[in-house]
Each structure stands twice: as C-alpha cells, then as structure tokens.
Image (tube, rainbow, N blue to C red):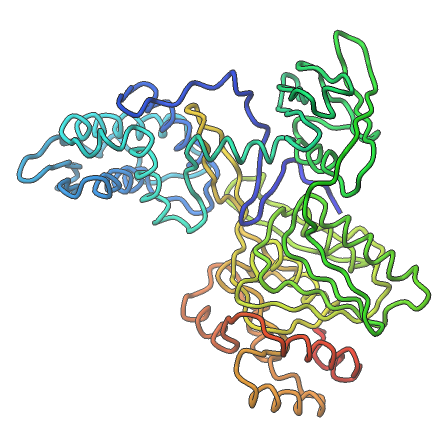
Length: 518
C-alpha cells in the first residue's frame, strides 16, 4: 500500500505542510478593516478553490454567493444581478454596482487561477468596503466574521464539508496536526522540505532530552521524515505505547540522536475483547495509531492458545478520522486488491490505494457492524472489505461522507478546508451521498429481520439486488437513485440486535457465505 504524501483527514482530513507561525500576517483586528489584508486572504482562498475544489462554479457565481453572505450579518442588504451588473443595495439605495464582464464565464483547473482569484478578490473588497462603511452590524462583526460569512455562503452552494476555519480554531487544529504531543514540542515545515522544531515547552520530555528550537528533525525511531510527510512524523511521535522514542536531528551542521520518554496519556481508539472464540473489535475513531492498534490486537488474538474463529469489527457511531489509518485498518484484513480510489479535478487528487498483502486475520470470517452514524474513514474500511468479499456488513445505511479535504493556510492565520477529491469503493461506486449498504439490514424492524434470516437459511441474500445496483453506480448519481437505495435500509442508530446477528452469522458459515460479495 502506497504512503500518502501529506496528512489526509477524511471528514476531517488533510494537512499539507504548515507555515511557521512567525511567517504569518496577524489577523485583522475586530474594529478595523484593512482592504489589502482582506484582499490577500481572498486571493489565496479563491486561488486554492479554483485550482482544487472538487466541484467549482463560475467566478461570477462565486462572487455573487460571497456577497450574499452579507445578508447573514445585516438583513438590510440586497444583492442582485441586473443586466450583467452586480449591485449591492441597502434599503432603497444602491451602494455599489460593478459589471461582471471582466470575469471569465467559467473556471477550470487549467486556467490562470491566481489572476481570476485576484479579480474576484478585488471586486469583493470593493463591495466589502461599501458594506463596512454603511453598516454598524458589519463593523461589530469585524473583518473575520465578514470573511467567514462570505465563505459559508459559497460553500453552501459547493459542498457540505468545505469550510473556512477562523484563526483561533485553526491554531488548535494545527497543534494537533503538527506534532504537538505529550513530548512537549511543536514542529512545522521548514526550508528545503525539512521539519523544524519551532517551540519546546519548559519541563517537558523534549526539553529534558536536550531538544532545541531550530533543530531539524531527520528521523524518528530510525524512520526518515520530511515536511512533505509531516503527518507520518506526527503519527510516529504519538505512537501507541509508553517508552522511549529516538529523534535524529541536525543542529548547526551536526547530527545528533536524542532519547525522549513518551508518556501514554491518550484514550484508546480501539476496544478489543476475545469472547467465546470471537474477537470483538470496537473502533471509535481513526486516530494516528488506529492501524497499529488493530494489527497488535489481531497478533495477540492469534498468538493466544485458542485463536479466534471469527471477528466482529464494530464501526457503529465511528465518525471517521485519518484517511491513512482507514487504509491501514483495511490492509490488516486484505491480502490483495484495491482498498479505495480517489478522483478530483486536480491531478494530485487521482489516487489508488492497494493492499500490501498479508491478511492479519488469517482468512477468518469478518462481520462489520455499521449504523447511520458510521462515516468517512469508517465507511472506506467497510466499503473495501465488503466489495472485496472479505466481510459481511450488518446494520443500516451509513452516513455517506466520502470526500477528502486539503487544508489551505491563509495569510490571516486562518485556514480553508477544501474538498478536492471523492472516494470511490474498490468496485468504482462513490461513497459520498450513497454511504455503505449492509448485506443484512437491521433497521426495518424485527419482523423483517426474521424474514430475512429465514431467506438466508435458504441461500437467498435479501439485499443482493440493492447491493448490485449500488456497485453499478458511477458519479454523478441522481438524487432519486440515492434516496431509493438508502430507503432499502434506512439509516438508524445501532442496536443490541446487531451483535446478536453478528454472532449468528459467525456461528452459521452457510449463512455467512450467502451474504459475501462475489
């Protein structure tokens, strides 16, 4: 399985190298509006959107939608297009009019995105200045809220997961992505694809080991790291167990090895229990070490006196997490084949992930449990195991979140999450909107479930027709088809009956085999 070149959060997903804090311009103050600062933010944001956003609108539409965000702050504003002219009004007064003729009729990844973005930014700033000068409500909200409101309206039209992240929230997200751990230091991308220590906290393990600000991190426990793979560095730093971790750093031309004591202060993303020869794995989130934890749990189970006869992978309520960890968990159960694909307008969004080989579950039957809250990375795992005939899925339709975001740093210390790729299951159908359908539905009531179990006993798979339709679909999928398919097994919260059904399938190999994808 190929490694990603940047950290990917699916549902909450992907971090390119962060920009050092000291290189960022301070966010505009609440009571002031600095046109040049706002224009820089807008130009950067729209350039990134025009280049990478999965589904993009025309520049004129982007401008119009952003301006409509003003009405969320002050309902007295009106925004309309009259004869090719965009007008901003307040009450009966037209505050500003500008022709849309300078903007191109369409936007594509092949165009000069920076130039188009600059045209959008210049126009928006003109309108924002007019709005600011005429509205106490706009001034009270400040420049940050003005920007956020405009972006929110744009993304309301584009997709449900792209968003503008204000500077305070973005700083917290960066801390989690850039290696701020119980080890007591932070790192960020430096020059020439290096990872640089940007702060060392007093009294922490890093300071005690002699780590200094400005050190370049070359390797973690012997594994080379670079700024292009800063997410891998974060995963290696967090690890899964207590003990020492070795950092190889460069300082003033010298190569040093430092040993840091790594405390274990995080809750587990995995609950594993071997009960009556069945290994029950409950995954709550896909965090930085989930794949490793699953591998360790499987290794322990098969190293015991009596190895498990089957495995239940419980992903009910799992909202997702790191995409790379979804690939690792899938890889633990697959010996070959495609795990997932991604597609988007940008060439970098075209990816295929393959299993590396070596089924750690040793071919034992797997039942995966899902419900209406199962989302994102969790759906990728279930779709992979289901499509590859490696697991029987039980429960209800999952959420249907199959978009990958990148994180675009902005000059005001905020960030933009941009949906730039959609995830496709191994057989080519899109996860977004559709979600994963179970092979055995438990959300239609006890009577229907009992009837379906009887059919399975006769070798009939009750959801076979719906699953065949699902796997034949390709983007774009009509909304009517999405509703129809999800209606065959409506999303619902997980229930105790799911566990009973999972046990039944593992105890009855013929029933299990009848539900496996072929």
